[in-house]
Image (tube, rainbow, N blue to C red; front, side, top):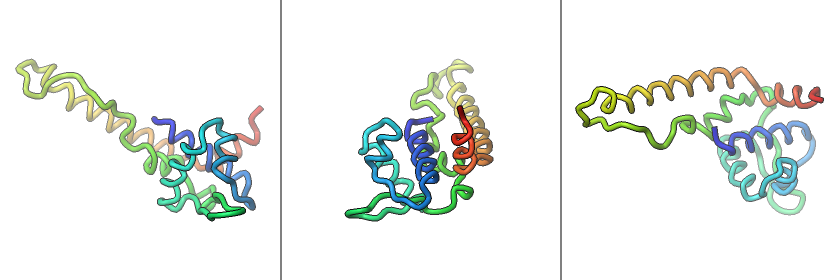
Length: 139
């Protein structure tokens, strides 16, 4: 999983906690402890997928695009992180004579695909509202 997923979830939970307010990228970044440019990049993707709304100018900022109960972590993963579970490099050579060397890439690709599907099914069961409830009761 990549850090943009964490930034997206944190941002959406932060906005869900402030339902009647707009939050700037600076205030969100301060809450996350990251750079506002990273927040804006992630929020741009969320905006394109209707998970947040933006208002430009003075008093502008971000608000949720829908109810926190409608936003699953699985949806966020699909929007932000699909494919990140699989490494960018895999060992082996499909053209080799050795059965291990020639088949390991295909087998590992299948394992990573199945693993990602399992992670998404789990994340589909958790909403931003659920995360906010847990945050509010954490010690």
